[in-house]
Structures are given as structure tokens and as C-alpha cells.
Length: 93
Image 1 (cartoon, rainbow, N blue to C red):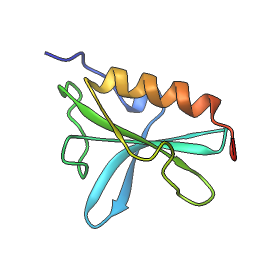
Image 2: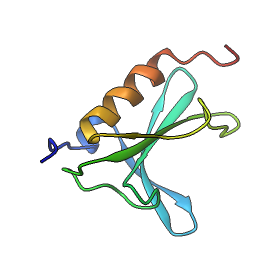
Image 3: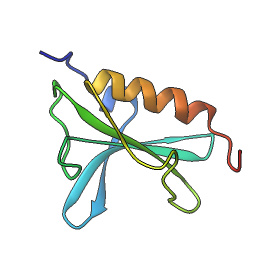
Image 4: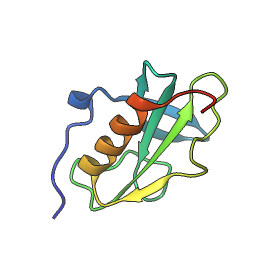
């Protein structure tokens, strides 16, 4: 069983991405934001989901960074990846 995570306590908010889809979103001062969804890419993951998707996007143009979202083992790893990349992102680099 995956570790339980409280996305709100980690600074994420619910964000409607369009088309009836929703994700956890966190904005970073570096100029990007992260979205975390469940495996279908359209819903919020359970707090103890066995795997989640995490993607990072440029705040100015919404361009997906690194080409695509990553499937990771659980929400804790998803938040860790988002925070590590989000905090160090440099636009145009």
C-alpha cells in the first residue's frame, strides 16, 4: 500500500483543467507549476494512490516542461519530484 499524503498540506490546491478534469496544482516562484492527477490523467488521486502522474508547466505559456508527465509510484514521490523541479526551474534554460 502506498504512503498517504495530504496534498493541501503540501501546498497544492484543486484546479479544474478543462473538459471536466481536475488536478492538484502547485505554483512555484521559479515560474512554473505542477499538476498531479490519478492514472487516468483527469481526476484527483486518492490520498494513498499506488501511482500518480505529475507534470510541470511554464506559468507564462502553459507549455509542458520535459515533454510529458511522469508516472510515479505514489503521491509522496509525485510531490517530491514537483517540488525539486519546480523550485529549480529556470525559464529558457
